[in-house]
Amino acid sequence: MTVEADVLIVGAGPTGLVLAIDLARRGVIPRIIDAGRADHRESRAVSIVARSLEMLDDLGLAQAAIERGVPLHTLNFYQGTMTLAEMDVTAVDSPFPLDLCIPQWQTVALLRERAEELGVVIEWDTRLVGQQAGEHGVSVELRHGDGPGERCETGWLIGADGAHSAVRETAGITRERADLKRGFILGDVAVDWPLTRDRFHVYFDTSGLVAVFPMIGGYWRILASTPDDRPPQSPGLDDFAAYVAERTPLDSGVRDLQWSSSFVARESLADRLRQGRVLLAGDAAHSHSPVGGQGMNTGMQDAYNLGWKLALVVTGRAEESLLDSYEAERWPVVKAVVDATSTTTKVATGTTLVARRARRHALRLFGRLNPVQQRLSNAFGEHLVHYRDSDLVFERWHESQARAWSDVACTGPEAGELVRDVYVENREGPVALRHLLRTPGHHLVLFAADTTDSATLAAWQSSAREAIAGHGEVHVITRGHLPHDPLDGVFADLRSEAHNRYGVRRPSLYLIRPDKYVGYRGDSVDFAPVSDYFRALGVRP
Image (cartoon, rainbow, N blue to C red; front, side):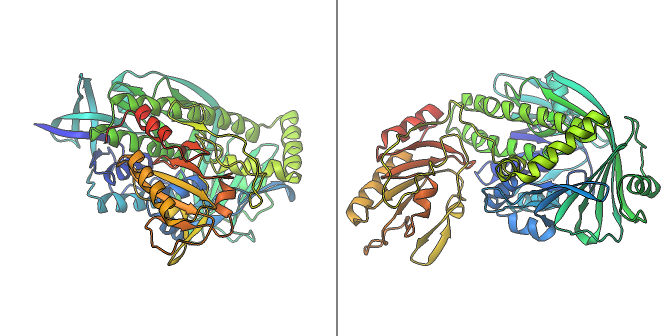
């Protein structure tokens, strides 16, 4: 039997589900399959960083995630009983200045609920066993459990099926691989420790490290490096107790093991993220050490970058060439993540005298320097990721003379950088800019500076809507009071906070992409570049 599907996503983990949700809310209901069972509770990933919480907020899930997890604010490093450093993870420019500790299966459960609300049906115990690319689609062979096979014709095939991706392998996409020769065990246990439960705790010893994270229900996650790359296949309580006793001053009386696993840190990076109508995301494209907690977050951000572009192509509103930008923008990001986690893992698990001294010196140094902590916090929260070099973004921004009300120290986010959240006001009261940007599509924000004249604002608003050509919404922000004549989509910035955050000194435009990166900015009310942006994007009205 042949089944038609515009998009077939292989893998119903966090990456595949974020993509399914993003497509579905843009009117494209994908088919999604997974080789596992619906009741499988994979729990390796436990960290959702600030940038991913912002993404979940855009999907309407951030608050529910925070309610199910444990918010963390600090990362503590120890050598025995001595504190080497404390890193404040709240020093990040985000409406969610925290790191959320939540089991991966809970993250998946939230995403599944949202996907199903949007009409997405997940087909479990279904695997891809073959594919054949064509000019206008991919012919895929599926297997349902031990039952009969099925031939599915899909316009686009997405591999979100993990490090051992069948999509990648059957597509013939090669990858670079390396074995870091570091073994780890991890598990969730009950134990009575006098530790603050709003932070990570990492202990270094001559034989390796032990990291402990607070989990829901009063449990603790233990991650311990092993002396070699042959960790026990099914770690038990005795294994965790031994490492805690050897490397930390904590009570080793662990009990009630909820879940455990082991692995050897390996890294891989696919040579490409797109091959014709096959695209890779998440661990299928890049896998690396879990040290730093970047894996699941990076995969979800892959999906968030791809979703709006793929939806435009599938609905016939953009040329297929738009999808080339997915690889162009994300491959440098994931390459940097793989390199960084490789280095971090080697530094964190190094046991030689030189490695231990260098690590101790570095931790003490950054623990005393606020600027270094702030940069590390932003890196940890994935706020330093940008697409400034992308062909899809540009700006016409000049160093204009500062106005009396402006903060001359703030230049605003450049084209290719993340938007910044700020509160503005309408007649009902304050509203967060990020909530105005929730509607799928582009958003053109017109900063009107001191202009409050109703006729002028209405004329600008009309021109802005003509320039955005049905691809999104227009928001006008004035520094003055709201005009007496009600105008929908006009907001007040009475304390100049929004204008300052965006470096605005005179009437200016910011065009925000659907993934909340700046696509274009210009410090004049000239709408021609907005039209140029959409032409460069290759989209149609």
